[in-house]
Image (tube, rainbow, N blue to C red; front, side, top):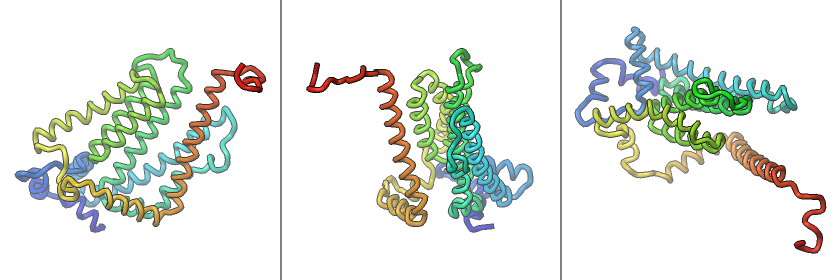
Length: 288
């Protein structure tokens, strides 16, 4: 068992420790609520917290890699009706990069909530992909629960709600996902289902935290941040990561640039298709 595994699981390995950590006078909420509940289930089943946390951390890591590979397979299936994907498009690049990422593998054996959090984030992304795929397949005749687009949007909302319950910073993923769906679908009515699904999980949890702890933020926020942003330290972390994984960082920047360029080109092409100009327009010599 790793030291980080001990650190992650000793808080739930006995009733006395749990009481001293989360129920002591003046203490604030834990930062990994969902993972704590999941490890408590293991204790209820008679499994030690260390064994349960390590096993499920590794399982979530493996499931994330498998899901990334599955997304590539689905992409290849979608391309069967059109031009086949190129050699790079046929490779499960994301799954390969995930499996070869050293720090990711280290955290997968730590017993922390990191692997579960990552799996939920990727699953939420997969649900959004499926919703957009159903938009392309749908003829618009289905409505309500029979609408596959609405169903996948609600599923994405439930998953992002679980992301928020896994870590406080999961709220950022929920907000970004909602903004993306609003931009991609151009349908506030459909995205409302996503917002309701997220709120159905997050709002009761937030009310309970305020009523029980008197605070929404965990102990770690006050211990590590003390209401200071520490933006300089964050930039140092980003720099260290970019130096360690320079090829991956450069590829990410290049992928973002290509995606933005493709989106702009697509919009220009759509605009030209909607407003065709007659041959020879505009005439030479200025305005007609």
